[in-house]
Amino acid sequence: MSASTHSPVLKHHFDDLGQQHASERLGIWMFLATEVLFFGGIFGAYTVYRLWYPSEFVLASSHLAWKFATINTVFLITSSLTITLGIRAAKLGDRSALLRYLLITAALGTAFMVVKGFEYKADLHERYVPGPMFQAEYAEAVKPIATMTHAQAEAYFAADATKSHPDHEPWARDLALRNHEGSTAAPADPGKIQLFLCFYYIMTGIHGIHIIVGIGCILWLVWEAWRGTIPPENYSTVEVVSLYWHLVDAIWLFLMPLLYLAGIGYGHH
Amino acid sequence: MADPTTPATTNDPHGIRKDVDSPGQLFVVFATVLGLALVNVFLSQSIGPTKFTLPLQLAIGSVQAGLVGYYFMHLRQGDKVVILTALSSLFWMGILFVLFMGDYMTRHLVVSQ
Figure 1: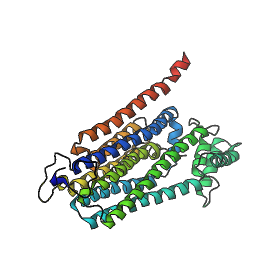
Figure 2: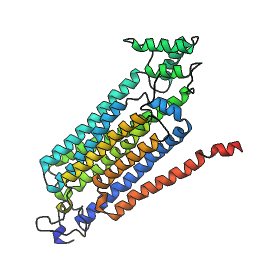
Figure 3: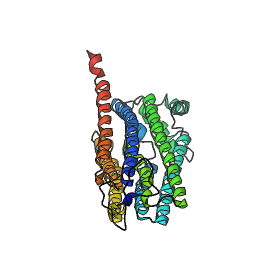
Figure 4: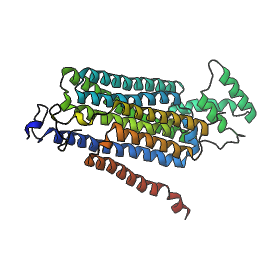
């Protein structure tokens, strides 16, 4: 070990800090490669079904809260900036800036999850959840228009939409009208709509778990930085967590178009 | 990052400060990635769900992810083993996609025979 690289941060099994940092980076990148393949499998399954059932996926996506997702995109991209600024602060030995950037990053991650919570709550309130809730809501929307002409059904749902407390959820009205006899649009299979929703909840749920793990890691970094155990020689600790956080951000950049933007601009009845 | 070939100075014995990110550059990358996200939403809304929308959305997403990887994840610093690892993950994902898409997207041909 050369004298110029001796540091209390150096682990005994490395020759110098350069080797240690390179090993830490390689280790986390190996892990990220497994994450890419993990999400790649899910994206692949989504791709197959999207190609098989394009109209149902567009219709299902059009009822998701893309505005919530856009706000969350802003949160995540901003958090990627702040954690990168945190690495810079760690390298420069600026502990207060490091703490500040880490806390901002954790706060943005938490804000993401809070918005996600509101989004799930709205979905649950609309019974836009695959399974019995979905089926019951859809059946309730189909039942009153079963004996109506298509024009009458349109008028019935238009009147329902103007109520302060509509009897039917927007997605159920839309789906029931589309599948109503006399509709010029191609029918949409409720089962395939629920398939999209399965992807939506699984993909955003797994991503959300990654966000929660990332917040935990960042809070651990806050604790370590507060204790003063992240000197410039140990900046790679911050970098390792940041690489994970950036990957989670990058995955969201694909979830956004696949789930939320797939049906944006779709003309509802 | 500091590596065995990074020159050390008296003030920076481990060569850590040598490649500190420029805040200006980070903010430009941030603004670009954020701008692309908003462009993606705006374009999707304007065009609507056509057959070109998804490829366009994914192309924008890929550029965003590329910027995040290159600048925020420091791939630009050229650690060759790390770049190899990152590219390998994409290569293996490509194999994954080619194999199962080759199966699922040709099944109807087999059935129709």
